[in-house]
Image 1: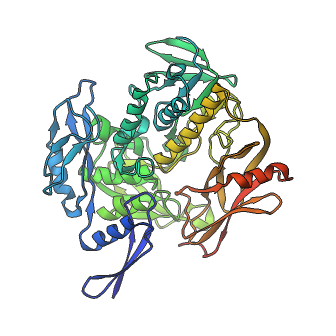
Image 2: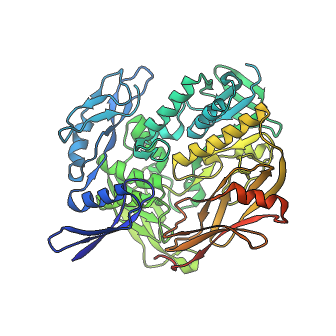
Image 3: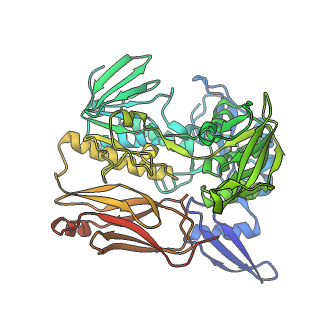
Length: 120
Length: 432
């Protein structure tokens, strides 16, 4: 039996959680979470950690803006963050763009999109 | 331009939410003017491209631009005028606001109410007095954030960060994702002032070391930063560097995330009372300062961890300012000072002005130290406990609050209570 101490990153409350695992890595107990999302986070974190990625892509906007903030609309596997950044670095958005527009569909994972976070 | 009933200084999250609240309370939007010094509204959120905003306010996790975008849309829907590129220069206690903008020139307007929503700014190297040369490559974390996220260029490649405030932690991750090597985050205190989630997702995720009880003792380089020397500090000896613990790290960039200061030059100019612990105005529960009709909300009042709380506070100020203008709201029958007792650094509000029919008052506060298990109390000067709550962990970086119910406040009107105090008792010892 092993235990893992985690800080929940789901919301700014940052609950400190303890996950108890059996020798095969199966979850026996999750403690310290204050909501069900914390439990989901702990489960994901000890099996397959994921993160929402935010970054910027270049854009030529009429108001002179050079950078457009973007994010993944779902968390992506943590180990693919740098692969995702390599694609983002070579992405250029065409104005006009509206908040929520999909810039790259099926980004990194099928069903996950890279979306715009502001109008440009 | 003619006089306005309500002038809001600052078009960031606080100013925008206050403007929306004032209209929703019944004000005509054309009686309101929001002054914004930048070329667009939204404030610092525009460069905070990371997610984590809006969980309380909107029930979903938004990025900064998305959060500000929603408020900008609400302001536009209500046709509230925002004057951009407008810099407020002076404020008087009788609510005359002087500002300058390309559109209006040098202008002074009289208002019936003013809401201060100027936000805060970062402490700089000058405030720390770090020894060494004066090369380029020393930035505040927020300045670097603007370069990367708005201007689109990287200010450096090998980075040391001094201070573990949230902006520093966020920038550690951002610079790493953009290809920089973040070598260390040094924090002079034995604990981080940043949110626990940011330590986890910005440092731990990328293996960036957090060196607690460490500071930068020397900056090297003539034209550009070439290295910094860091050292452990002695907690028991005024956090002085400990000789022999120095380590020199080769780097081209030093980011400072060493605290935020509410931007209160206008407030001081108007002779408004400032709280030494918050560096913001002293306010009552309506966020009204010592100058009648002048309100303050957001980071100009006290530095918040969450923009959601800024919006909430701005609603209080915006609603109260509208009530004053519309002639609503009862008269004050009793004023109770709120003091920060054991373990509490400050409270907001610092006084409660009771009307005959008071509403619930939520008191926000920060604790002095890191605690494992605590009990928070609100007590009268006569020793009567009004509110009590247990909490499993508390740290200075995370704002706490307690709500004083209306009926408790009502019971204080007649009695001889002359003030209330917020304090904590440790029940589980200090956390390490």
